[in-house]
Image (cartoon, rainbow, N blue to C red; front, side, top):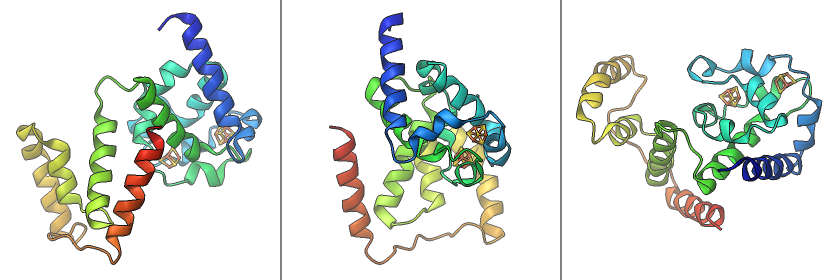
Length: 188
Ligand code: SF4
Ligand code: SF4
């Protein structure tokens, strides 16, 4: 992508973020770092949340969309509820993921995208997370990776932190329908 296209995309995405409910608060970010300090998965991110906001304001959309950060966000909302400026960080992450997919600008390793897609499939099926299936789906076809994570899975199972069998919630079919409708809407 040449410079002009990149600049146009940066401008467009920034305007889209600002026009989201409460999105304009991005202009009030004081770079205090509370979001980064509150994030439980910041250690695994290539750019901390504080930096992502600075990059968005500086027009560095390509770097943002190609970063692992937006795909690693676990949507816990800690950053959003603690931000003194009311920046809707978590909501921004959803929009950036959708934009990245549409524009074909995603991290090279595609790990986050793969995890998100498989998580979606599991939720569609059971209405809630079922970690053993997610673990298998995410690691296949790399059987060695699957073998590597098995001891960890076993530990979780023995400590009662991971179920052996899945349990479907009541009305799982409605969740499946809602997710399919959301995917259709997002692809427009
Ligand atoms: S917590 Fe809010 S104000 Fe502070 S750096 Fe993060 S987004 Fe900016
Ligand atoms: S919502 Fe995402 S970015 Fe914010 S604290 Fe949670 S995991 Fe981190």
